Length: 312
Picture 1 (cartoon, rainbow, N blue to C red):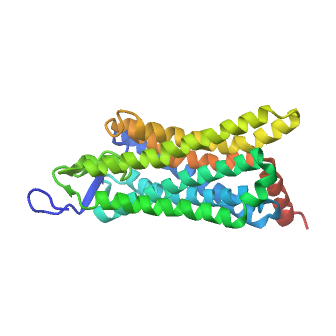
Picture 2: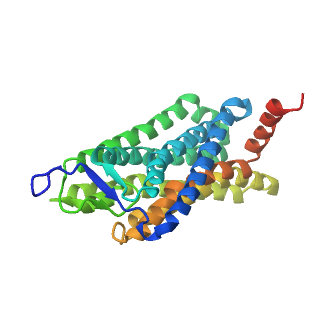
């Protein structure tokens, strides 16, 4: 990356929450606690869905991969953020910056696709129950998960193709706690048109479109629920879907506001808060939502505790 005076930009300065001053240490401990809860909670779901035969169904197969993605997704961001909060002059090498950007796009897009697959699984289970075992067979589930990861890899690679060749000169200060595409594009010289088009395309293809598909599937599910004669059946179906719907609204809601509002990329403080919420805070809710709102997971957890921690 050549600058105007012939030198090469080898690192960027990350001004993460620079206005907090001495309160940065308090934020450090808060983020560390959230990160540890996220890791332990999602790891528990992975182990639980692997150990309990009752949870060996497509729904929990998708949940296991979603929990794995939550761990990978936050690990791409949080450790670097924690180190920068303790540093008086946080810097990141250009190579590390683009690597972070690549994996952030990869895991973020994969999550969007996987949440869509989970919504389709719930749609088939509730609206086409007689065909569920045929439609959601093992090959179909593996194909959906594999396609989700493939879309993530393609998106991360595409972002790299658009961003890596850009030249950077003048300031190399990123007003963010991570190397997100919009803050980095603001520093680029020359024509950033294709980078902005690529970011818009990813937003439409992997944030807005999946969100609309998920909402459409839940509209069909809602119609099906309202048509049920049994109130107990309606409550059971709603309980099954509410956990996934809550996670969808949290994740897509903040991500949509962050990348589609007219001021996206221009209001630095707002961008940081929105990004902080869906990259750090939202993944922490996943284990609580799926354990407190899902009776199958709660019962499986009780059986696992009794199995390994019962009194001698």
